[in-house]
Length: 435
Length: 119
Image (cartoon, rainbow over all chains, first blue to last red; front, top):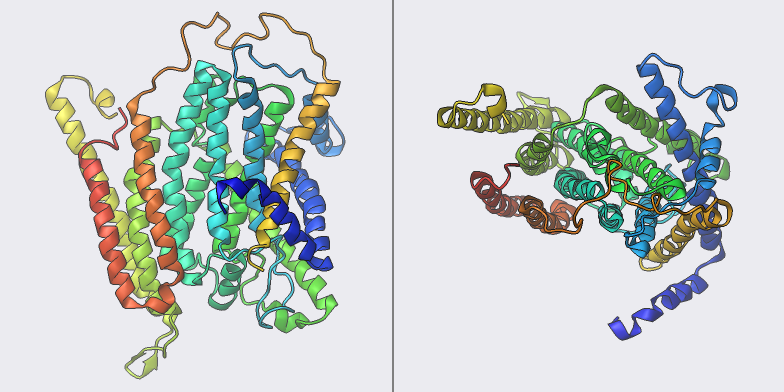
């Protein structure tokens, strides 16, 4: 399609809608209205409440308890407050871009959720032992799409900081972009082992492969990948200890200093929606979505009936939510525990630790594939068949450990060399030289 | 089957824009509007802002951006390799070792040159 006819793209989409069958249209409408504009914002509102409660407990307080029982109406009260607040835009700001930025961030957070399978779905369409996922759409390149739209958020953050024409906003935005691009590299590299093992970019296919092989987190390269994905996710959604872009003790509120009322509320909504989305991503990639280990839904409930479909999905959606909310709780926990990082250590950690280890980790993941996943007869040692997973652990665990140790050792050596150099050159005390 | 999936993305995009703009419109209708010169100033510590904001920024950030670009394009090559690794076999692994080694040398060079040191 060339530029001249690009304006007709929405019309092409509309045409595709016309040829859709009725069931798909109903499914999409339900997803859009009930899921995206009903349940997801609701979850986000109560995540804010939950975070306040959890943080309060960590600090030996009670948390919100005035508005409704247990403070459960607090999110509604907050929304009402945000709506009735005056919208203040600085005189010198770029008015249009100032409005565009929160919208763009929220759109990116919403688009991410489109490919996340929240349950196992039915097995009526495909192979009886597999599930087509309870998901809005399942494009064959789902994970690539997810990575692409999630990095749109960085653009929104930069536009917010730049358009405010506030020095603190710009500082916050520059920090945010530097941090987001730095941590996107280990985040993306951490997904490569999963793709390699699943042999597909489709999120549903990734879950189905885990029904066959077990959760991808149970392997040395999988553990390393999962840890890095968790850390990079924290950095991608600007949460403690990676919240330098909005460090209130240094730069007021970072890129959203000049946002008030509902526009600030949109940033807030988008941030928590992103937290939810990245936890969903980690669950799908490493914890098998809505599946339980050693629990074959289709064998227990049957695969073809409507009852089986309903029971399977009730259980799998609950399991999926439990996993996601555990990861969300871990994020709250980290926030209540760790202080903010220093900027040079933040960048060092991404480029000098995570990127080299992730690169080696991809190769170790390929070794794991050769040992465990590639179909072949189990090796015999002394007449006893060795299970594939045991062989995999024996081969890859030393490799993973060696990689992590080597990178840490190399960094230590470089650090002490720098220290030595700066100490011999000047006479400054050790503490100052350590930076 | 494949293309029409993205129709939903288009609908969701429009829906999300509406969802984001709706509260802003409501605020525009409901919220009070009392303008004043001081209120519409930039919020910088309470004193009047000094100097221009849109200035040249330090080079460090751009160097990190360039490094990011290198590794982002690397993943464009890594993804197809990872997807079809199962059918390619051991030769693809060796090729990828060579590719990653070249890339790693690049990272090492940047590291040795002090590009990755935040000053």
